[in-house]
Length: 461
Ligand code: HEM
Image (cartoon, rainbow, N blue to C red):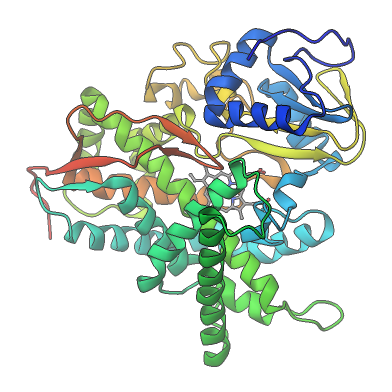
């Protein structure tokens, strides 16, 4: 694909316009989705930190990586943006799975739902969730055997799904975890892949989508019905959703509750699982950093399981997690639609245009990060953490649409990392090397086969 600069002065530089021809657009789409990170990093390298793409005469897309421009979109001028239209397509977009939940909704409805859900994420609640996080991790470890090989990506996915189900929605998913994990995979491909076939055509992908969608709806309907039958207020988010009444006296419908539950299952487990996957991958390649992590855990915990209260005495554990999310931000890009003409980076951007924030590029930019490809947890030490510009680091986004599960996720990731690393070393299977697969989240392309080795320690039972 030739990389030539556009000449229009009112647009930032970018590759030549793609034209109207659907076949040319498809070819371009395939070129990008085959290696989105590589292609976009090349563009930023060639054209600078704001890249303009044009499809046909009127369809404009802007890629951003400069923290100042990102701040304009997410914070200063947030009211002029909505979630991208491509996510809202109930046929092929993310909305097919998530409906109108917190990730995909906008405006007053989003504001009202966000206010409703906020209490489930208050600091006091998260402190209580810490016990569940550690207990579930210990249960998982009980099934691990010294020297055995397992897919750590699968283990992390099941663990974080069980934790979000138990803590936020007070439900047990035991038998359903496989199906939910499959649904998430299928829909990641649907939302990010290129699908040229009409939906009525029973291609293997469409059949799979319909099947997992049906299963997901059945699981959620069952969970809602069980809870309605048991009545009473359990004080959790699902109870809150079932008991909420608006000014007109209407409660949330099952469809609305379903959308929010699926959203929380999806947003609340795959992201944290991937943050942990990349931390394990990096630690296995950096024995010196791994050893430093182990010595912090051994010295502070003295063989006891970690608790929420211990976290402030485990700064290196936090630094490792933050640096893993810099190198591999689980949410590597965020898309918005311009709802009112706006200026970003000095360029006028028309209503209807799409803006994509490429967090991955910001996190790998040598202007903000020295040796950006190196795994250096010390960047996040209290002394150094203030040295990079605001929004050069944004794994959880910023502004009004900042991740609602931000603190939950940090506590969860640190407690899981500490509980596992205290007892096990995770080593990469000989010669195994993975690439990030950039769908909605950044995941290890073919899972994470690792060998688990029990650490010799004086562990208290
Ligand atoms: C390491 C883990 C996580 C990362 C990196 C992460 C990242 C993000 C990011 C970047 C966004 C903004 C997306 C956008 O605006 O386009 C977001 C939104 C969201 N996240 Fe997270 N997240 C994580 C964990 C969680 C957890 C544990 C939960 C819930 C239990 C959660 C629930 C949500 C929800 C509901 C939204 C939509 C918020 C709104 O628009 O009001 N996330 N997350």
